[in-house]
Length: 390
Image (cartoon, rainbow, N blue to C red):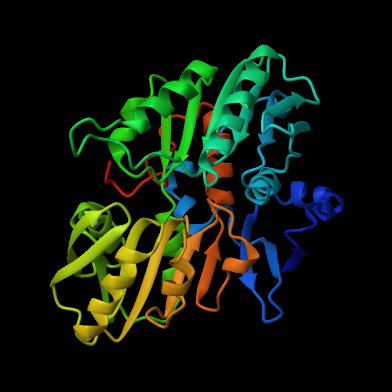
């Protein structure tokens, strides 16, 4: 097995490995960011001859590979929100990121200029709207506008994390539905399609007046959990709240139909939660808490404390989006969790790493999704895009 190692602070070093990565595009490529004792971050890219796709991308319906369109007509550009993920996606696809200038003036205004032609091209813009959400969202809108004015054939907004998704309904009088507003902004800016990962709720897809491809990061976490030596009889999947029961049930079904437990919580305000009761048996079990995002970690940490009180042997936290607003790091590293498993849809700063944290890459998943959108491959999303909860 060959191995490439690069630092998150020096992505340019991967350029000299382009021929090797491109030649290995038909083989399995996995990316993983590891926490090291010296506090520095690193990522590893492995490719092997044994498999064509990761397990969650493998299916009999994909035995016949789709016919590739002209690769010169596919352009991938990265915003400033998560350049490391964009580079990993390009590595998986065997392509180079498009050249783009993104600057901020002294008063905070954003300037975007494409440094190469996109006329008649299918353009994919990778930009999560993670914190600072307003700046990253505005940057995405200006990138879309720049591509539209440069006569791109199609523009797909690849949004690994869709901010404002929690404001998807009115729970009280005189509230805004910001998710619909942001969807309108992206559409009006000129996007033809959206590729999103783990939206907070399925109805958010209906807020867009353009096609939305919704992929889930949970299969990446499932593959990682399957590699651990945890007996199936010892597992119990836990939903941290009633609203996440469908997600946890689908997750449990994939883990050899593991039993399900539910934490009943009563929320008194935004980012404030109080755990009241546990539905289900976790005594002597390895509890796996599943959620779409971890923000302040109030809900999941209080749920973990309840699980330990009810006799759980170990508690794992699994989430696609790691927002990690203060004081999330203090709560997650307090010893309640055996391991906190997240994905890299949102970049993790070096100061937010702690020994129990494991970061998995969704670059393979998003890269393959982009290929299948670009190739107009029919029926390609049903197997690996979701857990049947939409």
